[in-house]
Length: 393
Image 1: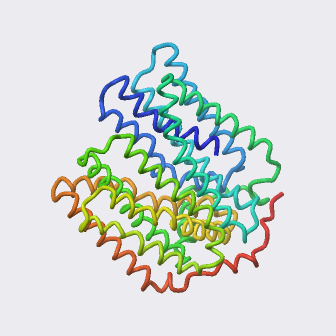
Image 2 (image 1 turned 60 degrees about the horizontal axis):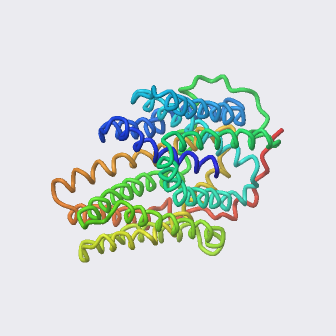
Image 3 (image 1 turned 135 degrees about the horizontal axis):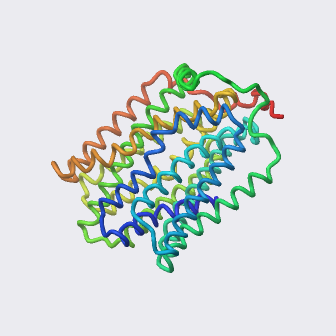
């Protein structure tokens, strides 16, 4: 969690640093793209690396790479030689290292947590990310206000603590097996094929892609509407913090709710709540949009914990990296497209029509989820009780 808060702090500091040096919003956008692009470019290769190599070593090496990237910015600032190109390269390197670290981490989680507890562990991961949403950006902004190098120095130090915690863990992060020398393309195809054959997981991955598209789009709609209504940056930040608080509450409730409700029920509650923001069409206030997404923040961690936990538990250890990378790539596909589509729709038709279009998409996703045979036959988490423990050694 400390490492992730450090990353969130530096992520908010990247655009602030670029704007301070170049006064160019376009260049700030380029750095943001450089930080996000590795998800799409390297995700599948990271899955192969996590399944082929020692996962703990992959995570440690990636943390070392991130320490060097952050240290380079701190050093260049101290010498007054920092350039825009160096910031962009550092963001790209740090983002790439995160992708490889993150995919290897999924396999590590499976090795140290019993199968039946993986949904609860996934809920704990959701709680961690919610804390990061609350603490990371304000911390990064505050540190940047004290000195431009402080967010990046804090991030570098957090990676050092991450390395220490990894070295401290003694449990192997993968099953004992021979190294797979199959060509990379064939290994990626194996991960895609396994996920495609699991009807529930395959359908859920595509639904997640649609959900992420709509959510990222409605975030942009809110920012535009709030700015037009005269909201300050601090007030907009407070609204996002309230969503983080709602998500944290949902993460803490997730272990109990996943025991009380069926997997399909959690899916349908989440999907039908997603379109609640349609109320903005009738009550045109930024507060309406803000309030309507809070229930989604509460319920989404329940859905994430059951799907991620179940997928992690049932995937064979030698495929967990590749399957996770394929599922996440599908989910991430919609994220950059959502704001792009929303921006074009707002410019052409206005925020109210854009909201209506997004609400129709939500209703379509919810209807599909309700009628889908794959979702209707969603598995039970009780199946995880019978899974054998990973054969680590």
